[in-house]
Image (cartoon, rainbow, N blue to C red; front, side):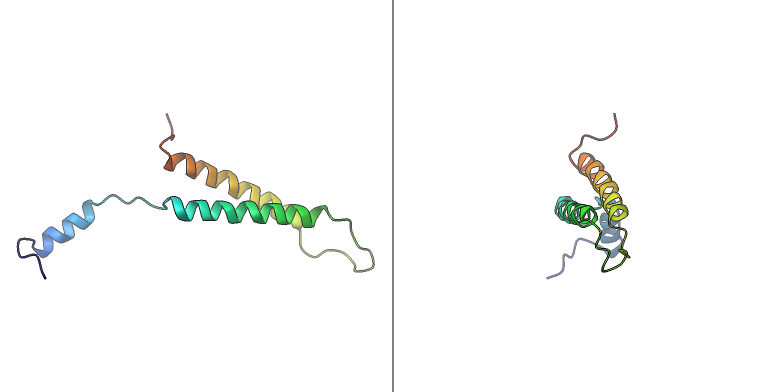
Length: 88
């Protein structure tokens, strides 16, 4: 059933007035959990002693752990903004 009192331009204007809320809580917390998990995994893999029989490691786990830590910091800043504790 179509609302007869609402024209196409009114519907478009109402859609444009709606605030863009960006990334909400659920995807933010999922991304934060995944990033923390990857940081812990990369920290564990990077802390293992080298196995000289297998040769050198070709994946820089410590650097990946550092990138995951930076991602956690950015996501925590985003959580702070979503909670309304933004810039003063």
